Length: 499
Image (cartoon, rainbow, N blue to C red; front, side, top):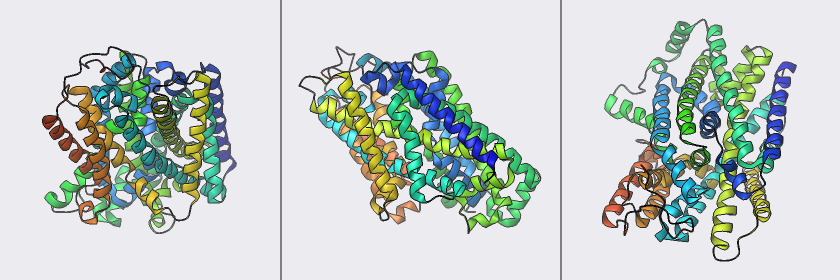
């Protein structure tokens, strides 16, 4: 590993730690400020941090590896994911911001409880449990990815990489809360787009240009230059296309993305954030795929040797100048951290705020801000410890399984009910419970059935199943009265009618 790569990575680390310290100084030391940074998120910060938090190691490692192995067919991911971006920013973001601001909600479970008050604590407890169960292994997966990068860069043991990544993220999350997460994600999003735009240009040049990449792929395997892996469009191509396009169905249900909408400053921030997010997503997804395709040409041995998922960092240190290679490696780590930190805060909030404060202390005396901040930080440490144990544990089949289906679980459990709750006045408590139970359940069942996995993936099927059943539940058991507007924020009244 060249000194330039190490220095670049150290500079990145120092900058992130600096942002964490500054955000801690700017903190107002209140419970709400720790969770949503005083709802002061501007357009650029909201847009870039929302995007970076949703695109983790699956982009810089997973998507690059998929492009390396499958070729041009992975291009379907771009319209699929961007469609999810567009839907979220056009139909969810502003409505979520207005409703949560007027009701005082600081979490997704807060929003659902206020929107479906007849459900009482059942809605809140169910939502919180699903988030913790799905997000903890998700965080574990981010630690696994970061440890692979550290092992490759510095030759350290797996457990050392896990602990370094934990300490890195834990520092600024504990000290600065959501403000530190949003600010660091803003910087990490910029680093990601720089790395995933510059790197493919250099790699393609090493191959000999775009035409040389195409010819090389075609010579290696003709399937790599086809948009459909199967000549039979109806059964092979259509299923493949829908599988990639369907990734976007999960975005409205990602709590770590929805938190950006809750914390946004105003309508202008939402409009700006949407444009910034779309452009960023297009550049990052395109860059990751081009990097994977060019890496296939330059490093054919990765398919059986190092592994396709590590083709990006291997290509970076092999073909890029030292400083640029350092930026590329830092971009991979940034993608991991920008998701792990957001998921960590959401999972801990589900315990500290939604269960501890809103359920255990619902009728008693409310804890002080200082007390709640301590509980918040203890819950962060609890989630970190659980994720670290999972990452370091040898046999963790159950949690590996949950991790592989976490996107489908969250997207199906929360996506349909968040969207319908914002757009349809007649949706009631029965429909909300139906969505969360059947959404999470269908994601697990579909993901465990090999015969079903051969068709549509569970991240496509589960949200559709949950949506259909939620609509049916609404038609059969509509809300007793359509919600009209908030009387207060105590949970006894409904939130305002979104428009």
